[in-house]
Image (cartoon, rainbow, N blue to C red; front, side, top):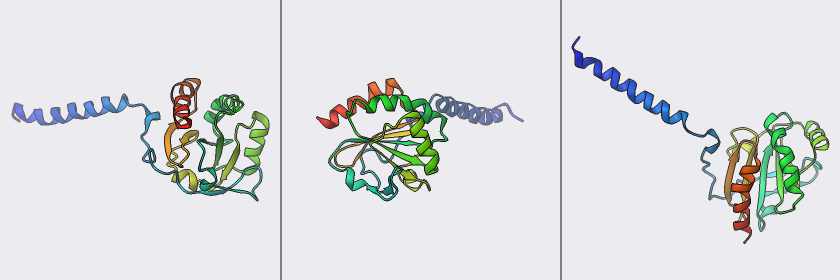
Length: 176
């Protein structure tokens, strides 16, 4: 074989290494959501605490709110939960829970044990509303404005830094 024939595989190898290097430096929590700037998906789900009551997207129009997707089986949800409980006591914004692919009893027991930061929690046992929101896994948190438009999506547990640097400034802006 001639020397230049080795350059093609070597060139392809270098290009693949470049793609790998770029991919390894991406933050998996910053997956762009196609919902940002678009209306939140329509939903009508039973309340976790009272399945005879239904909450719809239309019921939440006119106010800024947060949607926190959680489950009793989720270890990362347990990690963020005390922060959400503490934040909810400040009554700055209603926090709605979307209990994702969970049983009602397990979710109710979890909230009774760890505290309930939610204005209401919606029961999404099939995960269909979570799929409509583009949920990759729990926990995920969305900020939705008065017109029902999704303004932010955070993947993973909410941390004090995320709350302070991303969520609270956005909430102030949307409530101004």
